[in-house]
Length: 329
Image (cartoon, rainbow, N blue to C red):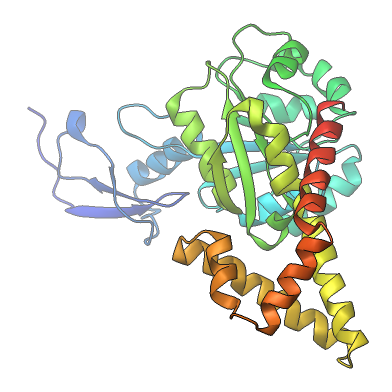
């Protein structure tokens, strides 16, 4: 048996969200790192601590040692920026690549991430590759990356209209792990509602990591791919309809004497609270309509007016038109 060391126990701070406790008193073949917290700095005078930090940062999970996953974003528009802003940069290494290197380097500095020289370099260095480019651009981008994709890398698309089958074809691979995610504009304030679906080649660990990535900017719903067009309408396009509804109500407030800015704030706050009421109470929206509508009162008069003017039918028609358009992209 190895002779024991006599330097006691030492906490070692690694990159990410955990602390590693190493014991210099353990025999060499039993020396291990235990996941605890990430509060302490390493003893830079201890070679084993320095080697440990190197292993944590650059090696993959082996014998219980956690490594820092690398997420690469191809395309650095508003959606990618919102997702990056929500991520824990102590837990993930983040690389970005855009169409203009100078601009990408400036964005990387602002976001406190790393800029890749090109898309190919990003793919080579990443565990998860998020394609955050426009749907019409994605095929040409992906075609140049085919030779750099390997089965240990997970490909993630947030482009509308491109199915898992489409992405598989574009990646020119029979067993490439692919995940499709559809976030919405509210990711910009950390409150996106996202849909997610994977192909059969994505393992549970990778799938959990991708869900964690998108939960950093809101909620994530597992949706069958056949329902993605519907999700795109009721979660992706619907914010525009809700903004129109808020603006219409605010304009009515202006008509009756309230300044526009104040009326908009009043309506927006009321819409936000009303949505929260549904989520917290678990009640059906129409039950809440009935609770607000007193017999012979002012609210029911407005509800009847909306019904007479085909409010519900108009909203359904708008959603249906959105779904049909998405299917024909």
